[in-house]
Amino acid sequence: SQQGEEDPQALSIQEGENATMNCSYKTSINNLQWYRQNSGRGLVHLILIRSNEREKHSGRLRVTLDTSKKSSSLLITASRAADTASYFCATATDKLIFGTGTRLQVFP
Amino acid sequence: EPEVTQTPSHQVTQMGQEVILRCVPISNHLYFYWYRQILGQKVEFLVSFYNNEISEKSEIFDDQFSVERPDGSNFTLKIRSTKLEDSAMYFCASSEDLSGNTIYFGEGSWLTVV
Image: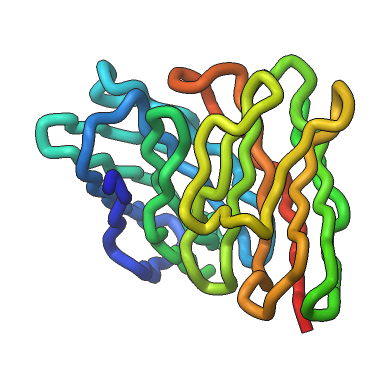
């Protein structure tokens, strides 16, 4: 299985702090994608990092990928209360396989 | 920005009834997917579809499930005889290709089987 496992399962921080979420997987991938899900809502695509890339930025998001360790991290800098959501990594070959997710709570 | 749209947003159905969930993928996309998420659990792959046929399906996608692209725009998931454990959020998704590009998800259809 190339299931992604994420840690921590839950993370609570204050506004302004940085949030780091980690994802590990088991098999070779074409790319890795991070998604956000507000409670009871759809999956919003945040960022895609290809297997030959090591780091990618998008606004306050920074994603790293270490294919030798089969791991990725998502860093949200200067977090806001509106960042409160669940964050999922998903590894891609011919389909996406989702990780278990990290529930992020940002307190004002 | 183009988006995947799904209907209905929420459906309540009696156990044993048939349900059809509808999706309109992004227009230039060629690959279509259904995923589901049981409340509080992870998002699980059900099926992928390309060139009018199933590319891959998971063990969840048993004989009670079927997918169809009845016309040039819609992509449907049919659950033939619903069970209580089919209660979940069902997500449709689409992508331009299999391996390199973003997979875009719809807002989901909540199915409640009573």
